[in-house]
Length: 494
RNA sequence: GACAAGAUGGCUGAAAGGUUAAGGCAACGGACUGCAAAUCCGUUUUUUAUGAGUUCGAAUCUCAUUCUUGUCUCCA
Image (cartoon, rainbow, N blue to C red; front, side, top):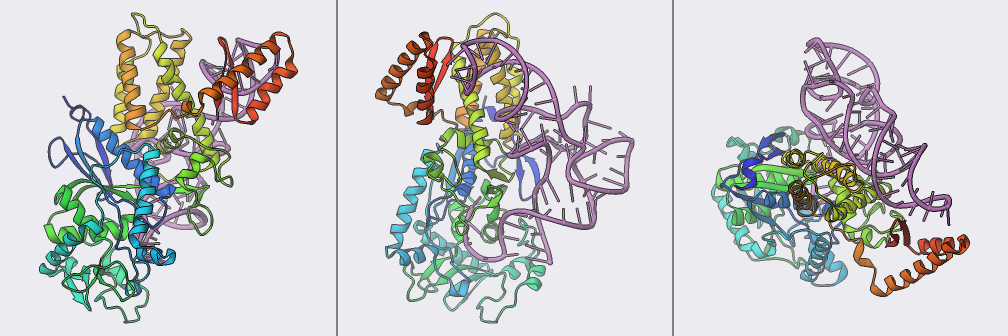
């Protein structure tokens, strides 16, 4: 029997603002759409957290036995740079600055995105569609919305008519809690130069000016699609009119997701998404991450330790994932060197225990209720993906494993098997942690250090503490730590 | 200004009305060590921003205040 049948999953739905029992449209299958990156610069750490949260969601759904189609788009066109009338495509602007083709920008940062997500051990989505690959579909959708009378053309551009949509009994604002009428009154003064009927209306198609490089022919003008459209188009194309889960960052709730609902609903007549999930923001040292203030770090820099202003050393992928998973995806998380150092210790402890597990003895009695513990792990994850509670449970197992090692506890062969499997599942399959500390040392390095360990051992036997300590301390300074144990000395590279 | 999320120990971060408020880090004590480090075992800390209220019972619900973050223009 599939695991999802015995573990009822609950998901916090941003639309209803409450936890709901997860029921899929089609038995055993999940359609999940997550708003992907706009590829006009390197993916930054905040992006990474959002995508990592949904990577974890994807992983857990798969583990529960669902057949998941996970669609995460690449936005390679369509973002307006400034106010609609002066609008300029974000990608095109970058291209002009760097004097290269727009698709060159797209290619460069798409490759970067894939490199980073691969490094951070993300599972690739099932489909990764691009906006530019779906221009035809987007034009079709605009036509459909116009046919319903919910969009209008002005000077070659097409806008979604929010007022009309709402007067038809719909609710633009259903997700973000915004009130359109209020918003109209509160809107900053319009100079009357906007071609939109109402400031709340948003672009479905924008006419491109002469200088614009990225443009496509359409019935209305040579231009480009509005930013919100691609997600509606690609989610319905690959997942149908009603999808199970739609995810993204909290900041996309408005206007992006609100517009998506309006567009899709205008076409299909149904609520397009059953469960809206929003991942919260990541702060850096208690402050918003922003390139302009320098309060910013790239995911790559964490792995190399190259950003000395923020980090004292490099951290492994496992540590970073562990750090992010220690917080709930709906909580704001504060990234700092101190927090990462703390996570590293905890992570290493966990990995140590996973290693010990392989060499444990079994008896005919268990002093720990393994099946109850296993259930607690599933309960935590099934309660809106509560990874912090899961990790707390994992440490309960760590404690037990260490007691086993010290012969202060016992376990049956059967329970040991369950413990191993469960730990493997949650640590590696669901949380996606990787034990990356080991492979850094080469054979040659190992030989050299082993030699020094041998020399130090001789020094210690001769009670030459000065030499012994010199070897130990100077190795530590270059990042090699010696660990004296009962069975001799081992080392680790930091 | 409007809308949204939040404020929990030395740090990080769970718990969403019901006995002693998870877990990690740090600190302290112990084991180990030539001494350390690493590792292991154990112990300790918060009464939940502030002030009211609802309740037999509140971190959890309500109101006010202060502060933080996000959105309202492109953002995960």
